Image 1 (cartoon, helix red, strand yellow):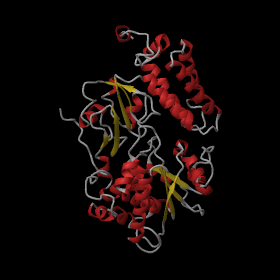
Image 2 (image 1 turned 180 degrees about the horizontal axis):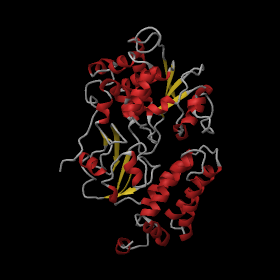
Image 3 (image 1 turned 120 degrees about the horizontal axis):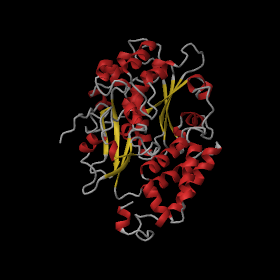
Image 4 (image 1 turned 90 degrees about the vertical axis):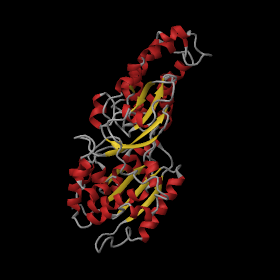
Length: 437
């Protein structure tokens, strides 16, 4: 069966060429032509064009990119900064790393255009320190851009200067939160800031700052080159354009699939060869481990911001983790809970204490020592975290717990009665009894 929605390779269209990361290859594929057009426009016209395209942030929240740029007070005499959040840390998410590794000049060109639009003369890429190969690839691409005159002084003519710095983080998940990232970039411990003031008013070094995701910025050059009508011809009315979907887990062909927003998981699975042979889908995440779980009932939900929200989850980073019937949902959620407990910065009490106690409860459930009251405690603690912690880490820790209890409460109750049914050594249920859960 052929999927209804065709793939739409834009950022990935020449990933299979020899040395796609080189400036020569990028030039052969219309590289820096979008920048040339942007420099013939005023900064305000560039912001208006990106806003009219409907481009939404590809890092999780889906906030309109052009609107975010317009929040910068262009008359503020303080320096303006652009910061790209490349601290891709969400479990299951793997789109920014391959994009930077394969076609780094998409990001660099987008940063130049965005910096021109917000009148910034210094831009930063904040990258996870563990991905050394990406750091080296980005640094080499930046050197190429400087040598070609795309960075430095008088870019495209007199009057526009831009310095670009690649900064390696220390591997803290919390630094994916934009204000914690800014603190880390300034040399302090990465912890979320109280807002307001928002970064557009007082961000990096207390100056007006725009923080965008890698894919959001990399999507800008094609929009400048091809126009807003081309961009809005893909995707849905409120979620236009194409995007990178990361399929991982129990699929025959995991990888990156660039498709219009609004494609369904059923269609993407057809491109990916389906759930691994001989098995069937049990549950999946639409946007990484911090988004509420969905099940096989949601295979035809449009994978855009409104469609996934209507199903009770979030599109997030479009990290589609696929789990078949052999997976213990309690064990999977426990692993994510342990991750959030480890990565909590400890600044606020709900998150610091809540994630710790959640992980303790999951340990009891997995070891066969849990009680029915523990299921209520999981929900109570999750409610204390959700919407009440200092940043979205608490929400992310609570989401898979609350959603898994909603969809798979019988499996949790089986753990309470007789230990993990997926562990023959620990479970006291027979195969027939487990089938009836």
